Image (cartoon, rainbow, N blue to C red; front, side):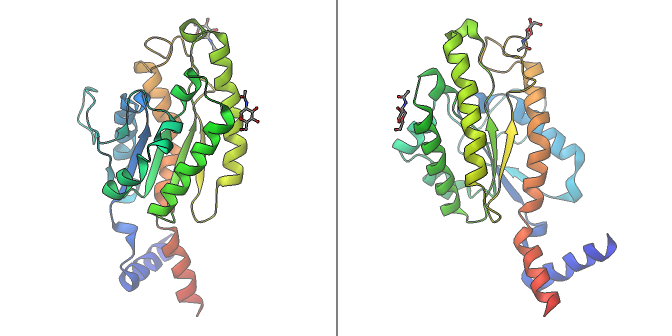
Length: 241
Ligand SMILES: *[C@@H]1O[C@H](CO)[C@@H](O)[C@H](O)[C@H]1NC(C)=O
Ligand SMILES: *[C@@H]1O[C@H](CO)[C@@H](O)[C@H](O)[C@H]1NC(C)=O
């Protein structure tokens, strides 16, 4: 551990490595992203300190009255669809402005509610990931299988389409993830009760916000740690030659 730490310090000196630099995290999606799970996630990251790593939540949006102060920037836009983000080319300018290192994404609920073709939604996800990698080739992407929707809200068929999309997401992530730009699949469906963990069958209540943050947390910690992975590769190169 001491050896590893001193090696990292040596590499930091040699390469101005980013290990001590602020890691920018963009919460991305639709209305669900505007909820207080971001505050809970922020608090978990701050409480755990992660070796003193500075973290900045980024995005053009801000807000959220969650009972305590947190970094409330985000890129959650109420009513948005994955398909719409691609059609309107919304993401590239947001990325260019905020320059995130890590994306934490929950997007697709409105695509499901509006009965968009699952194949088309997955295609949109692929385009969005390509846009993220165009912004930063080593982008780390924490990607949610989406929350359930209560059948009482939009009917059983809509709730079933969530299950179908989540199945397609898992298959797609395994083909789209790369060593350089990992996609961390997070199952936000399992264990989340669309009746007791939501306000109205779709958006998270206090209990739901705790569950979402707890599910995202380990993947976000891994993604943040992996932001310095290129420096680890540089270290192997420097110390093996
Ligand atoms: C969805 O799109 C795919 C490919 O474009 C097509 O083959 C499939 O029939 C469509 N499914 C529905 C339910 O429209
Ligand atoms: C959600 O909670 C309600 C009330 O406790 C329960 O009846 C229902 O079975 C739960 N649904 C799931 C999917 O666990």
